[in-house]
Amino acid sequence: MATLDSLRRDRERRREASRLSPGVPPVTIPPKRQTVLPPLPGRQAVLPPVPTDAVKLSPVAPLDLGLLYDLPSLELRARFVMDGFLAGLHRSPRKGSSVEFAEYRSYQFGDDLRRIDWRLYARTDRLNIKQCEHETQLRVALVFDTSASMAYSSQPEKLLTKIDYSRTLLAAIGLLGLRQGDAFGLSVVGTGLSDYLKPKSSPSHWRTMLAKLDAMKTGGTTGLMGGVESLAELLPARSLVIIASDFYGDAARLRQVLRRLRFEHHEVIALQILDPMEIDFHQEANGIFVDSESGRGLVIDSAAAREGYLKRFREFLAKTSTMVREEGGDYLLARTDATPATALGHYLSERERLL
Image (cartoon, rainbow, N blue to C red):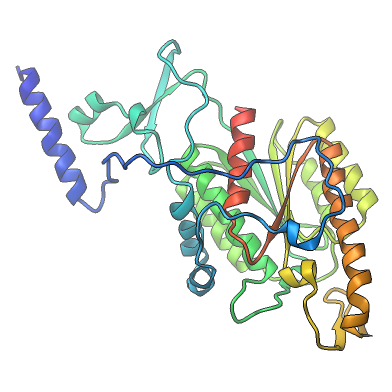
């Protein structure tokens, strides 16, 4: 029979081998670090009309947007966002040994190393996490707006379009959900609900979602509200609904949709994806401005129109954020020239609250 010392030596030898083997995730404990997220707005807070420079998101950590733009695939962009900012931030809100053991699941990068069963590892050479009866699986519904207005970028040579920024953000949230054991699904909304992926939690499911996100093109008029109404018929009970859109549409109908989701006990995070040009209107040159959804053009003197435009756009932002919060949801303005990490912080905060 093996002695305790021999078992310890065997465990250390296996741990060293795992560091050298490309097929086994690393188990070394990372150095302690502190990452500070900006304070999240209160759920009932009302956003007043604000100067345009106040709507910029404070970055959680430096992000090379040029590198993000240059990465050749959606998977690489999602991993770049995740690995650079949120690996190791989340800790389970429930700790302790007074809960009853339920089952094992495979270790995934980002899991708390304290929950690994090292005795099982010594016997099987596999990393497994203990799951207990108090743990629940969060169901996350990701809503992807593909209307024509999402194809816009004021600086196409260095900034992602709104739809590419949105798909990168949703892919990163899906990756975070996968690492936390949450079930996540995808709903593609253009003129209506055009595709629906049922919430699941597996690496193959995440890659299926990536393929759908990557394949979707923009086009047509905004049908976000109708699409979300159709989605409400399919959602599992008590889901977290994350909507990534510019929210150009019928404000009254938006309130009705949000009210229905709240009535059916779903939680909502509204991510309003906007280009800096839409928010700041820094363009000085005159020209023809074309509605990307209707195709109608309008000749505008930018200098003369800027003050009135900014006033009306601030009112639009304030109305949208106030409406979402009044109906019990969370709202976040995400600029395409700012880090996506703040939006991921909102997801983590909401997940902690719901579990």
